[in-house]
Image (cartoon, rainbow, N blue to C red):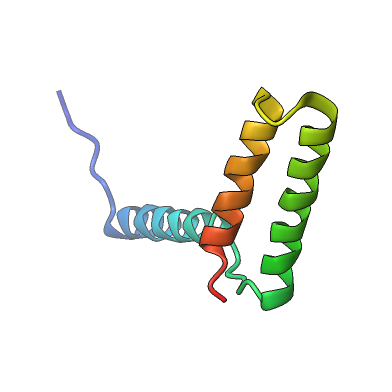
Amino acid sequence: MKLPSLRLSSILTKTLATISLGGLLFLAGAPTAKASTWEECHRRVNYTEWRYHRAVEHFGPYSHEARYWAHERAEAVRHCPY
């Protein structure tokens, strides 16, 4: 049985195509870097505080919703670098 012979140019072309496609897919999946500014950070904190107070008014201070927004508010404050 005779094995098919592979040409060097065929192997090189396939390798280059694979590397190019892999690099393209790798870079296409990368998220864009975005610096969080002071305004964005405090906007998130203010929004979570508003949602927490609204949940307390509608459902009470010991409700599931109030506990959820209290947790979200604490996370927002903790992640705020300022």
